[in-house]
Image 1 (spheres, rainbow over the protein chains, first blue to last red):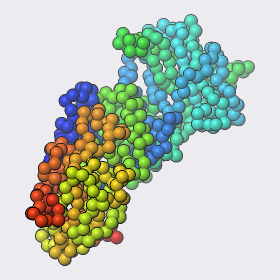
Image 2: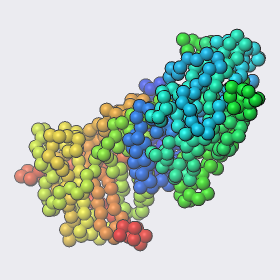
Image 3: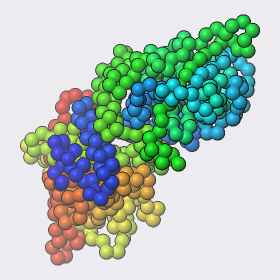
Image 4: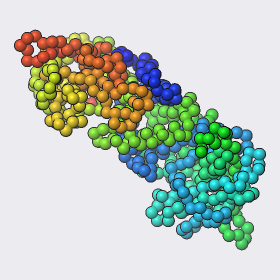
Length: 289
Length: 289
C-alpha cells in the first residue's frame, strides 16, 4: 500500500484491519471508514476545513467534564441519538414509543409515594400539574411494581444540576405503580428550554443556522424485571417547538394534553398518560441480571 | 417533523438546516448528516455502542492540549488526513507529490545556511546523512530562494517537542535554495517510530487491531511566493513499514535511497532528492497575500 490514491485509499485502510479483531469491530470500522471517506470525497473537503473540524472537536473536549459530554450534545444536534434509539429499540405492536435519554438524567432520585409532589422550590408564574396514568403490558394488563423515574426542567429552563439555586433533585422522583398499574405525581408544567449552546454544540448550531430550543416535556425512565425498560418523554401538546425540536426527539404518540383541573383540585392542571411495556425476551432477562 | 422515523430522519435533519447559511455549510452538513445516519443504520449501531463512542471522544478531548490534538491522530489512523491532502492538493503533470503534515511541525525553525547540520545532540548508533537536491518548476527550471523547513525524529523515535532531553528545535531547520535551485543539509538517518498510542488514538488502533508504527522519513515544507506550497516527506527506501504505515501516507514517488557516502565524506550516508513545484494560480497568489 505504498501507493495510496484517492481511488484505493478506502480499500487500503479497511484491508489494514487485523484478522484477529472481533467480527463486530470489523463490521463497525469498515462501514465507518467507508462513510468518512465518501463524505470527504463528496464535498471535496479542504485541508483547512479538516483542520477546523479537528480544532472544533478539541474545543468540544475542552468544555466536557464528568457532568457534561459535549459529544452527546453534538450527536443529538445531528439527529444521531434519536436515530440510534430507534434502531436499538424496535417498536412492536402496541408498545409505547421511546425517545432520547438526554444529558440530564441523575441516578437515584428521591423515592416517593404515589401522588407525591416533586416540587421542592416555588417559582413565580408556574403552573402545577397532576400527572397520572396506567402502565400495562401490550395486551392491556396492568403491571404492578413498575419503577418510574421522572425528571423535568424548572420554570427558569434549567435542570437542578445546571442551577445552583435549586435544591438537589428538585423536580425529580422515583414512583411505583400500584396493584392497578397506576402511577401519579405532582409536578410543574415543563417549559421549553435551549440545549447548552455556550460550547462546541452551540458553534455547530450556528454553522447549521439552527436554534437550540426544545419543547416542554417530562422525562420518564420506566423499568420492571420481566419487561423491556422504556426511556421516553411526554410532550406538552400546547408547547412551542413541537415541530422543530433542536434534537428531533418529538413523536406524535408521546404528546399529552395538559388540561385545566376542575375547581377545588390540588393542582392547576391535570395530565393523563398511559404507557405500554413489551415483555422482555429471555435473552434480555439474562443480560439484565 | 413531530413524527421522526428511521425512514425520514435524514430528510428531517437536513431540512432543518437554515436557508440563511452559506451554501458551503449546507453542502458539508447535508453530506455529513447523511453519511452519519447511513453508517448508524448500516451497522445497526446500539445505544451502548453510541454511548461508548461519545465517551471515547471525551477521552480524546481529555488527552488533547495545545501541543497535542488527539482528533488529528484519530483522523490519521482512519486515513482521513491523507485523503483530504490528496483531495485538496491535486497533482498536475510533473509536480512532486504531497503527503500528510502530521502533528509534529513547529513554526519558525532555526534559519541555517546551505549545507549546515540540524543535529544539536549526539545519539549512539545513529548514522549521519547529507541530504541534497534541486527544486525546480514543472518544466525543470531551477527556482532560487525557495524556503525549505525540514523536521525529523531523533534516533530514540521522538521529536524534540516530545522529549525533554532534546534541545529545542533539535533536528529542525529552515534552508533556502541557491541560484541553481539547490538545497543541502546534514541530518540523522530517520528511524521508524510509533505514533502516540497512550490515548484515544491508541484505543482506536487496538480496536482496529493495527500497530502504531510509521516508516523512517524526513518531513519537508517547501514554499516560495509564486508557487504552490508543498508539504511532503522523503521515505527511506530501506526502512520498515513502507508497506504498512499506520497513517497510510507513503507514496512510491517519495521514497529515496540513503546511499553509503564515499570514503572521507563528512557524513556516513548521502541522499539526493529533487522536488518540482507547480506555479501558483492567480487566485492562490491573491489568497496568500
